[in-house]
Length: 408
Image 1 (tube, rainbow, N blue to C red):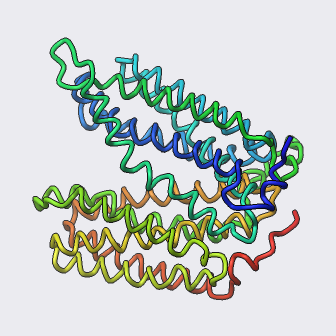
Image 2: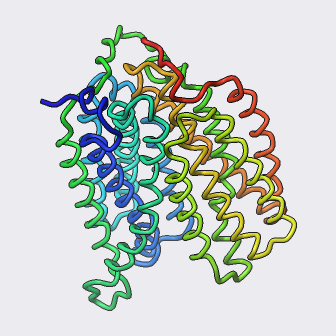
Protein backbone atom coordinates (compact mmCIF):
# COMPACT_ATOMS: atom_id res chain seq x y z
CA UNK A 1 0.00 0.00 0.00
CA UNK A 2 1.36 3.41 -0.91
CA UNK A 3 1.87 5.47 2.21
CA UNK A 4 1.25 9.14 2.84
CA UNK A 5 4.97 9.61 3.35
CA UNK A 6 5.87 8.39 -0.12
CA UNK A 7 3.27 10.59 -1.78
CA UNK A 8 4.05 13.54 0.41
CA UNK A 9 7.67 13.71 -0.68
CA UNK A 10 6.80 13.91 -4.38
CA UNK A 11 4.32 16.67 -5.17
CA UNK A 12 1.64 18.91 -3.73
CA UNK A 13 -1.30 17.64 -5.80
CA UNK A 14 -0.67 13.98 -4.98
CA UNK A 15 -3.38 11.33 -5.06
CA UNK A 16 -4.12 11.47 -1.33
CA UNK A 17 -4.38 15.26 -1.25
CA UNK A 18 -6.75 15.21 -4.24
CA UNK A 19 -8.99 12.70 -2.44
CA UNK A 20 -8.98 14.81 0.74
CA UNK A 21 -9.77 17.91 -1.33
CA UNK A 22 -12.69 16.20 -3.10
CA UNK A 23 -13.96 14.86 0.22
CA UNK A 24 -13.92 18.34 1.71
CA UNK A 25 -15.71 19.84 -1.30
CA UNK A 26 -18.49 17.24 -1.06
CA UNK A 27 -18.90 17.93 2.66
CA UNK A 28 -19.04 21.68 2.01
CA UNK A 29 -21.66 21.21 -0.71
CA UNK A 30 -24.02 19.19 1.47
CA UNK A 31 -23.49 21.68 4.30
CA UNK A 32 -24.26 24.64 2.06
CA UNK A 33 -27.35 22.98 0.59
CA UNK A 34 -28.79 22.12 3.99
CA UNK A 35 -28.08 25.60 5.38
CA UNK A 36 -30.12 27.12 2.55
CA UNK A 37 -32.99 24.65 2.36
CA UNK A 38 -33.62 23.57 5.95
CA UNK A 39 -34.74 26.97 7.38
CA UNK A 40 -37.09 27.42 4.40
CA UNK A 41 -38.39 23.87 4.88
CA UNK A 42 -39.06 24.45 8.58
CA UNK A 43 -40.77 27.82 8.08
CA UNK A 44 -42.57 27.54 4.73
CA UNK A 45 -43.42 23.85 4.58
CA UNK A 46 -43.79 22.83 8.22
CA UNK A 47 -45.13 26.17 9.46
CA UNK A 48 -42.74 26.84 12.31
CA UNK A 49 -41.66 30.38 13.30
CA UNK A 50 -38.47 32.25 12.45
CA UNK A 51 -37.40 32.00 16.08
CA UNK A 52 -37.90 28.23 16.02
CA UNK A 53 -35.91 27.98 12.79
CA UNK A 54 -33.11 29.86 14.53
CA UNK A 55 -32.72 26.88 16.85
CA UNK A 56 -31.28 24.95 13.89
CA UNK A 57 -28.10 27.01 13.87
CA UNK A 58 -27.88 27.05 17.66
CA UNK A 59 -28.14 23.29 18.06
CA UNK A 60 -25.69 22.69 15.20
CA UNK A 61 -23.11 25.06 16.73
CA UNK A 62 -23.45 23.51 20.19
CA UNK A 63 -22.94 20.00 18.80
CA UNK A 64 -20.01 21.02 16.61
CA UNK A 65 -18.17 22.94 19.32
CA UNK A 66 -18.73 20.28 21.99
CA UNK A 67 -17.43 17.56 19.68
CA UNK A 68 -14.27 19.55 18.87
CA UNK A 69 -12.87 18.59 22.29
CA UNK A 70 -12.98 14.91 21.31
CA UNK A 71 -12.57 15.04 17.51
CA UNK A 72 -8.85 15.81 17.59
CA UNK A 73 -8.01 13.07 20.06
CA UNK A 74 -10.11 10.56 18.12
CA UNK A 75 -8.43 11.63 14.86
CA UNK A 76 -4.94 11.10 16.31
CA UNK A 77 -5.85 7.79 17.95
CA UNK A 78 -7.99 6.05 15.35
CA UNK A 79 -6.71 7.67 12.16
CA UNK A 80 -7.84 10.42 9.81
CA UNK A 81 -9.56 8.09 7.37
CA UNK A 82 -11.78 6.38 9.92
CA UNK A 83 -12.96 9.65 11.49
CA UNK A 84 -13.57 11.18 8.06
CA UNK A 85 -15.74 8.19 7.14
CA UNK A 86 -17.67 8.32 10.44
CA UNK A 87 -18.20 12.07 10.16
CA UNK A 88 -19.45 11.86 6.58
CA UNK A 89 -21.76 8.96 7.46
CA UNK A 90 -23.20 10.96 10.36
CA UNK A 91 -23.93 13.89 8.05
CA UNK A 92 -25.27 11.73 5.22
CA UNK A 93 -27.64 9.78 7.46
CA UNK A 94 -28.76 12.93 9.32
CA UNK A 95 -29.63 14.74 6.09
CA UNK A 96 -31.46 11.74 4.66
CA UNK A 97 -33.48 11.53 7.88
CA UNK A 98 -34.20 15.27 7.75
CA UNK A 99 -35.66 14.79 4.28
CA UNK A 100 -38.33 12.53 5.79
CA UNK A 101 -38.93 14.46 9.04
CA UNK A 102 -41.83 16.73 9.99
CA UNK A 103 -41.43 17.18 13.77
CA UNK A 104 -39.24 20.07 14.94
CA UNK A 105 -37.93 17.99 17.84
CA UNK A 106 -36.80 15.24 15.46
CA UNK A 107 -35.32 17.80 13.06
CA UNK A 108 -33.29 19.35 15.90
CA UNK A 109 -32.08 15.89 16.92
CA UNK A 110 -30.75 15.18 13.43
CA UNK A 111 -29.34 18.72 13.18
CA UNK A 112 -27.37 17.94 16.34
CA UNK A 113 -26.15 14.74 14.67
CA UNK A 114 -25.12 16.76 11.62
CA UNK A 115 -23.11 19.10 13.86
CA UNK A 116 -21.20 16.14 15.31
CA UNK A 117 -20.48 14.81 11.83
CA UNK A 118 -19.26 18.22 10.64
CA UNK A 119 -16.92 18.53 13.62
CA UNK A 120 -15.48 15.05 13.00
CA UNK A 121 -14.95 15.32 9.25
CA UNK A 122 -13.59 18.89 9.20
CA UNK A 123 -11.10 18.11 11.98
CA UNK A 124 -9.94 14.83 10.42
CA UNK A 125 -9.74 16.10 6.83
CA UNK A 126 -7.71 19.14 7.93
CA UNK A 127 -5.25 16.83 9.70
CA UNK A 128 -5.19 14.49 6.69
CA UNK A 129 -4.34 17.39 4.39
CA UNK A 130 -1.43 18.30 6.66
CA UNK A 131 -0.24 14.67 6.59
CA UNK A 132 -0.06 14.32 2.82
CA UNK A 133 1.22 17.79 1.89
CA UNK A 134 4.97 18.42 1.53
CA UNK A 135 5.99 20.12 4.77
CA UNK A 136 7.94 22.82 2.94
CA UNK A 137 4.74 23.72 1.00
CA UNK A 138 2.24 23.37 3.83
CA UNK A 139 1.02 26.98 3.68
CA UNK A 140 0.49 26.77 -0.08
CA UNK A 141 -1.33 23.45 0.20
CA UNK A 142 -3.57 24.55 3.07
CA UNK A 143 -4.41 27.66 1.05
CA UNK A 144 -5.57 25.50 -1.84
CA UNK A 145 -7.36 23.16 0.55
CA UNK A 146 -9.25 26.14 1.96
CA UNK A 147 -10.63 26.92 -1.48
CA UNK A 148 -13.24 24.20 -0.96
CA UNK A 149 -15.50 26.74 0.77
CA UNK A 150 -14.98 29.27 -2.04
CA UNK A 151 -15.64 26.79 -4.82
CA UNK A 152 -18.73 25.35 -3.17
CA UNK A 153 -20.09 28.77 -2.23
CA UNK A 154 -21.46 29.10 -5.75
CA UNK A 155 -22.26 25.42 -6.40
CA UNK A 156 -24.32 24.64 -3.28
CA UNK A 157 -26.90 27.47 -3.56
CA UNK A 158 -27.40 26.89 -7.29
CA UNK A 159 -27.82 23.13 -6.85
CA UNK A 160 -30.23 23.61 -3.96
CA UNK A 161 -32.38 26.07 -5.92
CA UNK A 162 -32.53 23.77 -8.95
CA UNK A 163 -33.58 20.77 -6.85
CA UNK A 164 -36.17 22.85 -4.99
CA UNK A 165 -37.93 23.43 -8.31
CA UNK A 166 -38.10 19.75 -9.29
CA UNK A 167 -41.09 17.43 -8.79
CA UNK A 168 -43.33 19.99 -7.14
CA UNK A 169 -46.70 18.46 -6.25
CA UNK A 170 -49.69 18.87 -3.97
CA UNK A 171 -49.89 22.63 -4.34
CA UNK A 172 -46.31 23.18 -3.09
CA UNK A 173 -44.35 26.10 -4.50
CA UNK A 174 -40.98 24.48 -3.66
CA UNK A 175 -39.73 20.95 -3.10
CA UNK A 176 -37.71 21.21 0.11
CA UNK A 177 -37.23 17.53 0.77
CA UNK A 178 -35.43 16.61 -2.47
CA UNK A 179 -32.39 18.86 -1.83
CA UNK A 180 -32.04 17.43 1.68
CA UNK A 181 -32.14 13.87 0.32
CA UNK A 182 -29.61 14.80 -2.37
CA UNK A 183 -27.35 16.40 0.25
CA UNK A 184 -27.57 13.18 2.27
CA UNK A 185 -26.53 11.20 -0.79
CA UNK A 186 -23.56 13.53 -1.27
CA UNK A 187 -22.56 12.89 2.35
CA UNK A 188 -22.57 9.13 1.79
CA UNK A 189 -20.52 9.65 -1.38
CA UNK A 190 -17.98 11.61 0.67
CA UNK A 191 -17.70 8.65 3.03
CA UNK A 192 -16.86 6.38 0.08
CA UNK A 193 -14.22 8.88 -1.12
CA UNK A 194 -12.64 8.87 2.35
CA UNK A 195 -12.54 5.06 2.28
CA UNK A 196 -10.25 5.27 -0.76
CA UNK A 197 -7.49 7.01 1.20
CA UNK A 198 -4.49 4.72 1.37
CA UNK A 199 -3.41 5.36 4.93
CA UNK A 200 -4.77 5.43 8.46
CA UNK A 201 -2.53 7.74 10.41
CA UNK A 202 -0.42 9.38 7.71
CA UNK A 203 2.93 10.46 9.10
CA UNK A 204 1.67 10.51 12.64
CA UNK A 205 1.95 7.69 15.11
CA UNK A 206 -1.20 6.72 16.92
CA UNK A 207 -1.95 8.81 19.96
CA UNK A 208 -0.99 7.30 23.31
CA UNK A 209 -3.64 5.32 25.10
CA UNK A 210 -5.68 7.15 27.68
CA UNK A 211 -4.67 6.79 31.33
CA UNK A 212 -8.28 7.15 32.40
CA UNK A 213 -7.64 10.61 33.87
CA UNK A 214 -8.97 13.76 32.26
CA UNK A 215 -6.22 15.85 30.68
CA UNK A 216 -7.10 18.92 28.62
CA UNK A 217 -3.95 18.37 26.56
CA UNK A 218 -5.50 15.21 25.13
CA UNK A 219 -8.06 17.42 23.42
CA UNK A 220 -6.32 20.77 22.90
CA UNK A 221 -2.84 21.15 21.35
CA UNK A 222 -1.21 23.94 23.36
CA UNK A 223 1.62 24.47 20.85
CA UNK A 224 -0.91 25.44 18.19
CA UNK A 225 -3.08 27.46 20.55
CA UNK A 226 -1.73 30.94 19.82
CA UNK A 227 -2.40 30.97 16.06
CA UNK A 228 -5.75 29.26 16.77
CA UNK A 229 -6.69 32.03 19.20
CA UNK A 230 -5.69 34.62 16.61
CA UNK A 231 -8.00 32.92 14.11
CA UNK A 232 -10.76 32.95 16.71
CA UNK A 233 -10.28 36.68 17.30
CA UNK A 234 -10.33 37.27 13.56
CA UNK A 235 -13.49 35.17 13.22
CA UNK A 236 -15.19 37.28 15.87
CA UNK A 237 -14.12 40.49 14.12
CA UNK A 238 -15.50 39.19 10.85
CA UNK A 239 -18.83 38.30 12.47
CA UNK A 240 -20.11 41.52 10.92
CA UNK A 241 -19.91 39.85 7.50
CA UNK A 242 -22.81 37.59 8.49
CA UNK A 243 -25.04 40.68 8.53
CA UNK A 244 -23.91 42.04 5.17
CA UNK A 245 -26.92 40.62 3.33
CA UNK A 246 -29.23 42.12 5.98
CA UNK A 247 -27.51 45.48 5.54
CA UNK A 248 -27.71 45.31 1.75
CA UNK A 249 -31.39 44.36 1.84
CA UNK A 250 -32.20 47.20 4.24
CA UNK A 251 -30.57 49.66 1.83
CA UNK A 252 -32.17 48.17 -1.26
CA UNK A 253 -28.82 47.40 -2.91
CA UNK A 254 -29.03 45.56 -6.23
CA UNK A 255 -25.49 44.19 -6.09
CA UNK A 256 -25.75 41.50 -3.41
CA UNK A 257 -24.91 38.76 -5.91
CA UNK A 258 -22.02 40.84 -7.24
CA UNK A 259 -20.70 41.28 -3.69
CA UNK A 260 -20.48 37.54 -3.05
CA UNK A 261 -19.21 36.78 -6.54
CA UNK A 262 -16.40 39.35 -6.31
CA UNK A 263 -15.50 38.25 -2.78
CA UNK A 264 -15.24 34.59 -3.81
CA UNK A 265 -13.41 35.48 -7.02
CA UNK A 266 -10.84 37.60 -5.17
CA UNK A 267 -10.28 34.79 -2.68
CA UNK A 268 -9.67 32.32 -5.50
CA UNK A 269 -7.37 34.62 -7.52
CA UNK A 270 -5.39 35.72 -4.46
CA UNK A 271 -4.71 32.17 -3.32
CA UNK A 272 -3.58 31.19 -6.80
CA UNK A 273 -1.28 34.21 -7.07
CA UNK A 274 0.30 33.98 -3.61
CA UNK A 275 0.10 30.20 -3.18
CA UNK A 276 3.72 29.39 -4.00
CA UNK A 277 5.00 32.38 -2.02
CA UNK A 278 3.13 31.77 1.24
CA UNK A 279 5.67 29.34 2.67
CA UNK A 280 8.68 31.50 1.76
CA UNK A 281 7.42 34.81 3.18
CA UNK A 282 7.21 35.72 6.87
CA UNK A 283 3.65 35.26 8.17
CA UNK A 284 3.55 38.88 9.32
CA UNK A 285 4.15 40.04 5.74
CA UNK A 286 1.25 37.87 4.54
CA UNK A 287 -1.34 38.81 7.16
CA UNK A 288 -0.70 42.43 8.21
CA UNK A 289 -1.04 44.33 4.87
CA UNK A 290 -4.54 43.01 4.08
CA UNK A 291 -5.48 43.60 7.74
CA UNK A 292 -4.80 47.30 7.30
CA UNK A 293 -6.85 47.33 4.10
CA UNK A 294 -9.85 45.62 5.72
CA UNK A 295 -9.80 48.14 8.59
CA UNK A 296 -9.89 50.98 6.07
CA UNK A 297 -12.74 49.34 4.17
CA UNK A 298 -14.84 48.98 7.33
CA UNK A 299 -14.25 52.63 8.24
CA UNK A 300 -15.26 53.70 4.73
CA UNK A 301 -18.36 51.52 4.90
CA UNK A 302 -19.34 52.85 8.34
CA UNK A 303 -18.97 56.48 7.28
CA UNK A 304 -20.80 56.20 3.96
CA UNK A 305 -23.06 53.11 4.21
CA UNK A 306 -22.93 53.21 0.42
CA UNK A 307 -23.21 50.49 -2.20
CA UNK A 308 -19.73 51.33 -3.49
CA UNK A 309 -18.25 50.85 -0.03
CA UNK A 310 -20.23 47.61 0.30
CA UNK A 311 -18.67 46.22 -2.90
CA UNK A 312 -15.16 47.38 -1.93
CA UNK A 313 -15.50 45.67 1.44
CA UNK A 314 -16.40 42.41 -0.33
CA UNK A 315 -13.36 42.63 -2.60
CA UNK A 316 -10.91 43.40 0.22
CA UNK A 317 -12.56 40.84 2.48
CA UNK A 318 -12.01 38.16 -0.15
CA UNK A 319 -8.32 39.07 -0.40
CA UNK A 320 -7.93 39.17 3.37
CA UNK A 321 -9.57 35.77 3.91
CA UNK A 322 -7.36 34.24 1.22
CA UNK A 323 -4.22 35.33 3.06
CA UNK A 324 -5.03 35.16 6.77
CA UNK A 325 -6.98 31.95 7.44
CA UNK A 326 -4.54 29.60 5.61
CA UNK A 327 -1.64 31.28 7.44
CA UNK A 328 -3.10 30.71 10.91
CA UNK A 329 -4.22 27.19 10.01
CA UNK A 330 -0.77 26.31 8.68
CA UNK A 331 0.97 27.78 11.73
CA UNK A 332 -1.29 25.85 14.07
CA UNK A 333 -0.36 22.61 12.28
CA UNK A 334 3.33 23.39 11.75
CA UNK A 335 3.97 24.44 15.36
CA UNK A 336 2.47 21.13 16.57
CA UNK A 337 4.01 17.65 16.36
CA UNK A 338 2.80 15.50 13.43
CA UNK A 339 1.45 12.99 15.96
CA UNK A 340 -0.81 15.76 17.30
CA UNK A 341 -2.08 17.26 14.05
CA UNK A 342 -5.58 15.99 14.82
CA UNK A 343 -5.63 17.82 18.15
CA UNK A 344 -4.08 20.88 16.47
CA UNK A 345 -6.79 20.84 13.82
CA UNK A 346 -9.50 20.54 16.47
CA UNK A 347 -7.94 23.43 18.40
CA UNK A 348 -7.96 25.63 15.30
CA UNK A 349 -11.57 24.87 14.39
CA UNK A 350 -12.78 25.19 17.98
CA UNK A 351 -11.37 28.72 18.17
CA UNK A 352 -12.79 29.47 14.73
CA UNK A 353 -16.27 28.29 15.80
CA UNK A 354 -16.15 30.16 19.11
CA UNK A 355 -15.10 33.37 17.38
CA UNK A 356 -17.89 33.16 14.83
CA UNK A 357 -20.49 32.34 17.49
CA UNK A 358 -19.54 35.26 19.73
CA UNK A 359 -19.07 37.55 16.73
CA UNK A 360 -22.58 36.95 15.41
CA UNK A 361 -24.12 37.59 18.83
CA UNK A 362 -21.96 40.67 19.45
CA UNK A 363 -22.62 42.37 16.12
CA UNK A 364 -26.29 41.44 16.21
CA UNK A 365 -26.61 43.27 19.54
CA UNK A 366 -24.68 46.26 18.14
CA UNK A 367 -27.00 46.51 15.14
CA UNK A 368 -30.05 46.44 17.41
CA UNK A 369 -28.50 49.09 19.67
CA UNK A 370 -26.98 51.53 17.18
CA UNK A 371 -27.52 50.37 13.60
CA UNK A 372 -25.00 49.46 10.95
CA UNK A 373 -22.71 52.44 11.57
CA UNK A 374 -21.98 51.11 15.06
CA UNK A 375 -21.58 47.58 13.66
CA UNK A 376 -19.03 48.49 10.99
CA UNK A 377 -17.04 51.03 13.02
CA UNK A 378 -16.79 48.46 15.82
CA UNK A 379 -15.58 45.88 13.31
CA UNK A 380 -12.85 48.32 12.29
CA UNK A 381 -11.91 48.86 15.93
CA UNK A 382 -11.74 45.14 16.66
CA UNK A 383 -9.62 44.62 13.57
CA UNK A 384 -7.26 47.39 14.72
CA UNK A 385 -6.80 45.68 18.09
CA UNK A 386 -6.35 42.37 16.30
CA UNK A 387 -3.66 43.91 14.07
CA UNK A 388 -1.58 44.89 17.10
CA UNK A 389 -1.95 41.45 18.70
CA UNK A 390 -1.17 39.66 15.43
CA UNK A 391 1.90 41.83 14.84
CA UNK A 392 3.30 40.97 18.28
CA UNK A 393 2.86 37.23 17.72
CA UNK A 394 3.75 36.98 14.04
CA UNK A 395 6.72 39.33 13.81
CA UNK A 396 9.31 36.93 15.37
CA UNK A 397 8.19 33.94 13.28
CA UNK A 398 10.18 32.61 10.35
CA UNK A 399 8.52 31.70 7.04
CA UNK A 400 6.36 28.59 7.39
CA UNK A 401 8.76 26.50 5.27
CA UNK A 402 11.58 27.24 7.74
CA UNK A 403 9.63 26.32 10.89
CA UNK A 404 10.60 22.88 12.18
CA UNK A 405 7.72 20.96 13.72
CA UNK A 406 8.41 19.63 17.24
CA UNK A 407 8.92 15.89 17.46
CA UNK A 408 6.45 15.21 20.25
